[in-house]
Image 1 (tube, rainbow, N blue to C red):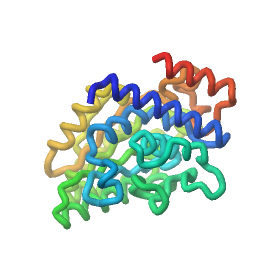
Image 2: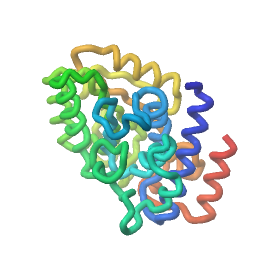
Image 3: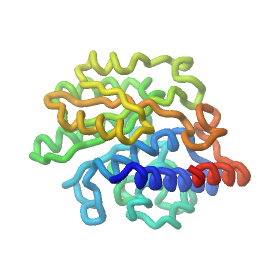
Image 4: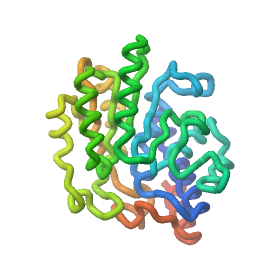
Amino acid sequence: MENEILKQHANHIRINILKEVANANSGHPGGSLSSADIVTLLYFEIMDINQDNVRSIDRDRFVLSKGHVSPLLYAVLSEKGFIPEEELMTFRKINSRLQGHPNMNLVPGVDMSTGSLGQGLAAADGMAIANKLSKNDHRVYCLVGDGESEEGEIWEAAMAAHHYKSDNLCMILDSNGLQIDGKVEDVIGPNPLDQKMEAFGWHVIHADGHDFDDLRKAFKEAENTKGVPTCIVAHTIKGKGVSYMENQAGWHGKAPNAEQLKQAIEELEAE
């Protein structure tokens, strides 16, 4: 798919993210916006997911380990036509299936219920192992936050993935440098994450998380890497696309008001 078309999808996804959070007056816009280009490329080009196979395991799968950025996942699933766009406005409402953290039993295209940080990579590794055992050649992609990487379960899963030679597993690290309490380095400092993943036996690739060509190249290299899992360190900007949100930890989990939403949409539509 042409990069310009991908950009159009990504911008529309970003607009819907902001509408979801603003309408609910609750949610996590910062990390949703930083990961939007990554997930757009995955769903519209890299993964073989479509209307016909969305409810099947005979396709590539995606685990949103940092489940609090569910507005992103719902916006992408809507963009793909798996859920109606108007349903996005039920985000975090009573009796809505679009809960604050994604529920695999309610929403087509949600491959794992996530929210407890650190657990998604372990689940993705289990899927990758199961695919190996069942001779299923499809791949498993897992999006992890750099703040989330402070969780010990990430490192247990990393060891297991290498042990089981899960070369069908690709972890994408959304490295935006910020988490709810501020700079990742100031909270507990998990860096250098790339060297740690390499020490656990992973193949590591660095990429610009907002450059489709760079990401595309990284995903291709991951697919061609055999015998070990791959970690793509995607360097991103928290709040990407909205001037007043970019690189601001305060927008990790805060909803924009009506005036702020209007400005954000105008900025995204002007790109």
